[in-house]
Image (cartoon, rainbow, N blue to C red):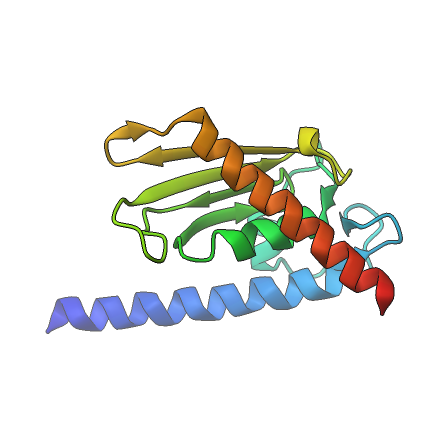
Length: 162
């Protein structure tokens, strides 16, 4: 019984912490005209009297920050939505997933996506796939990259029409 109580308390703490992080992210994030997500850093509006979870675990002042193409970011999460997300880091443009099985497939995969440039181009995206048996063929990884790029272009066209 004691283990269940501890688990419930830890889950509640994680939920409260995550909600605070998302609230802070929403207020400190803006989207500019160049299709990139810009994360606020120095010169932030006045909340210096308290430390939020985002400030505690976000990037340090001397860390390298990458501007991430918002269409590639959204497309990566959509295309790989069958995989459980282990971690995301919008500061470095990295999405890490756990193992999952694609719809209609029998083999489970996990992926690491790195968006390293704000441009909506193939060179901005790097996808590493792995199955439980080891690395997958380069053609499979390339097919996933192509699917992400296609979806990102669709999202951009849809956004520009609105």
